[in-house]
Image 1 (tube, rainbow, N blue to C red):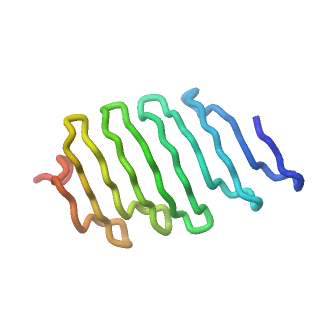
Image 2 (image 1 turned 45 degrees about the horizontal axis):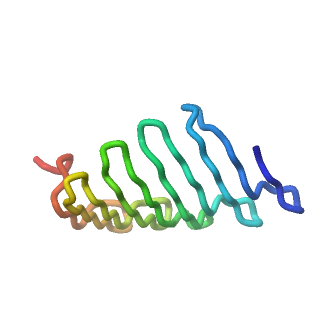
Length: 114
């Protein structure tokens, strides 16, 4: 279901993805998605505030494992900063360079361990 602006461009969309999960998207006057609310099956809920012209923004999410996270996305939709709280209450922080490579992470993620 889509609500159109006076110019006929999509401004608010309510849909289901291929996995039957609900998504709400709000778009600017140019039709670029600026805000989305997703409840993805097997992943968890997410709120994203985006500048789709520059592929940057902020994402707030909670996944099925109990991790709550705040992420800052830079140009070209690359993660720049991720801050999370694990189910045990511990905090994780990861910083990325402009190419998307990890420059700092604490505690060290299991996938990064030797």
